[in-house]
Length: 249
Image 1 (cartoon, one colour):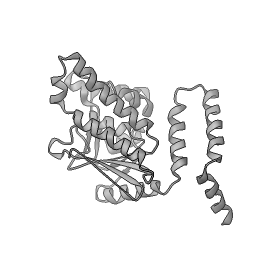
Image 2 (spheres, rainbow, N blue to C red):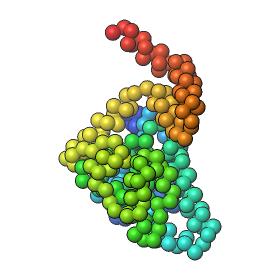
Image 3 (cartoon, one colour):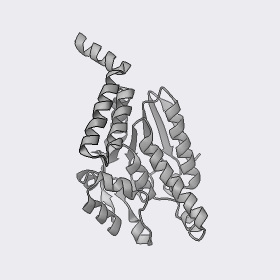
Image 4 (cartoon, one colour):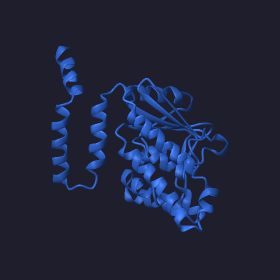
C-alpha cells in the first residue's frame, strides 16, 4: 500500500510508503491520505496524528509524470489541483494535531504536505524546498500556507529561487518547529508525539481551531473569538479534571 495507517497509544501513524519513488505523491495517495485523516478523526482513541515517509526521504515531490499527463487536459488538471488543495484544507481543519516528522528531503508537494501539518520536527540532515520554479512551475497551492508561516520576503525568496533549505535554516525562518540530531531522530519523534498524546484532546483541538480561525481577523474580532473559546473550554470535562488534579497537589 502506498499509504500505511496504524493507530496505537493515542497516535495515528500515517506513512507515505512509496520509497522506490522517494514517496512522490500520486492522486491515489492523496485520496488515501484523505481517507486516513477521516479514519483518525472518527477514532476517539486517537489524540494526535504523525505523518512520516518510508525509506530515505519524507517526500520528494508530486508525481511529475502524473502532473505532466494532466497538463493539456484542463478538467483533469483542475481535478488534480483541487484534490491536493482539499487535502491541505483537510489537514488544517482536522480537529486533532498533525505532526510531520521529516527526514531526508521534503520538496515540492512533499514540502507542501509538511507545511500543511500543524507541527514539524526534522532530522538535522533534512532538506526542505519549493523547487517548482526550476521546472517552469509554481508552488501555487502551498503558497497560502507558506505565506502564513514565514514572512513575505522569505516566502518570495523560496518561491522565486527554488533553492533547498537545510533543517537549521528552516528552523531559523520559522518554517519548522524543532531540529534533532539524525542519530536521535526516531527516539525524539516518539518522545515528542507521546508528550502531545498525553495532553487534553479537547484543549488541543480547541487551540488548533482558534489559532487558524483567527488568522486574518481584525484584532477586536480575534479577541472576541478568544473570549468565546475561553468560555467553551471552561465547560469541558478535561478542564474540570485538570483543575481538580491541580488543586489536590
